[in-house]
Length: 481
Ligand SMILES: Cc1ncc(COP(=O)(O)O)c(C=O)c1O
Image (tube, rainbow, N blue to C red):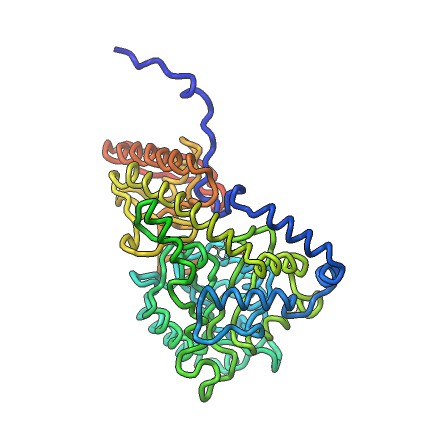
């Protein structure tokens, strides 16, 4: 018997699906709220003038107040977050660059320690600040960071730095009262990490702050996904009720711990700058094109950020959009949007993706990390591949055969320290960007490709593909067997 006749749908080009892109789906953007906030701001001459002229260095004052109040009610720290702890930024990426400019010296600062797998677009920011060749990977463990490894390597780095005299002073940064130069930077995404979606335990957070204090390290936490949280494993009904109870953060940030632990930055012998900052962003909860965020740290630290050269010259970044954010936060509209639109939508999207993974990928040997958490969130799911598959060829074949883009693990490896933490056995899937039906269909297609490749491996057959993989910057001619 011949093959069944092909349906016309089989011959049509497949709809492209992108499970790599970490953007919010356009349907989740609060366009009408932003439009009316813009209207409010621009209709009031005082606000319009404030928004359209150069702003104060730490940012638009009403915006700092609104952010401080909002963060206080979400994170519920023991003490209210004062406005002076907040500096308005142009988003987490821009601010990372500013903070490195102010608080590091490419020679005196020994290393940038990056929890890996890591947000890959941060690497270039570190390189631009002079840290190419000084980035070190610290692998995640079950609780979010392997601190035994980090402690040992920090110690080695300190020993090595003791030898030459010239690294005992910052070489490229003048002495400035408004800033200091840290000896180390530790970069991480403690909650719903990109790409692994892991959350660091409370115990590790406390130990990490202690370690940072011991080694004069600045902890930079990209806390950009904290607000997007939901219960891991509940029926839709119970999930909706449980969402009601998730209006506050389920763990303190590193910056909260650094503030509270043992007298905080005012303890005896401390210099007042603190050892942790929270690098926040409105990209994932309002819209990345707003290019606005905030950083929280000690008052001294926040002031130092505000004195970065580009701000001292041009005023706070995103001055106009921060007037819109002020309205969105002070009226409660953004909080309402997060509660009634984003969390329910991401819960559904996450569940759709997880169901598709259970149906199409787990039977092939794909597995999930941290499967037994109560609270999940963020944008991503990180999958371990069956042992006979590797990520780059799989991603290339997915694109080539099925027009579905996935994030291959190696792009999340720390450049120059790939040996310490390699991820050729992992892929990242994002559930924020594509339409829901495409999440299901995309995973089904990944399953089709994986099954085919597993069959080829079993049959001892080899494939040879030459495919440019979108977005990873490492076009490869890849042979696989
Ligand atoms: C961990 C992390 N940090 C920073 C960013 C970018 O933030 P922003 O848009 O505020 O620059 C992202 C976006 O994907 C991210 O995942």
